[in-house]
Image 1 (cartoon, rainbow, N blue to C red):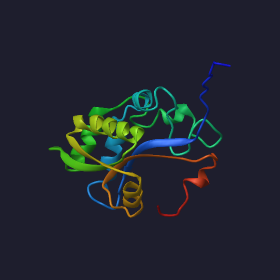
Image 2 (image 1 turned 90 degrees about the vertical axis):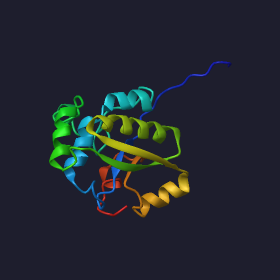
Image 3 (image 1 turned 180 degrees about the vertical axis):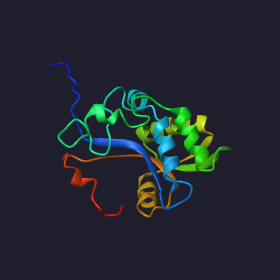
Image 4 (image 1 turned 120 degrees about the horizontal axis):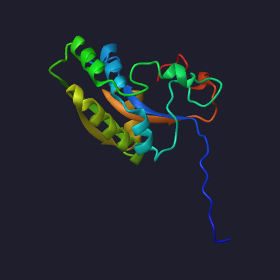
Length: 171
């Protein structure tokens, strides 16, 4: 046949911002919460995954391990970005005048897009993000050695059991 049918299939994966919490200023939970509150997750899915995917938390939805959507939407910033609330947290953390940070980006289209979305989302908070791309070997080595400040990253896993990706082992 000369016809091709494309079909989307569920593939458990996450796309998000990774913080090196062993380094200032990202060791301050208020800054990480502020970033979380500014992310427009639906927009990120629309742009980064061309409308695919669903908003989730640690255990990817849909599935028996995921947090129900009505509970997720109670978390500040999940239903819609809360820039004003995020600004207050940034100020409380001592960065009302802004801050500059680096973000290591895997040189793949999806991560590059995610990096730009991260940079744009935090700009209204006075956070300036310098994106630094790295090819796979350098990116993964830097991540595993914790030689980064922030990163826009992703990972996937076939089983949906949270023990596979929420273990107590250090990265």
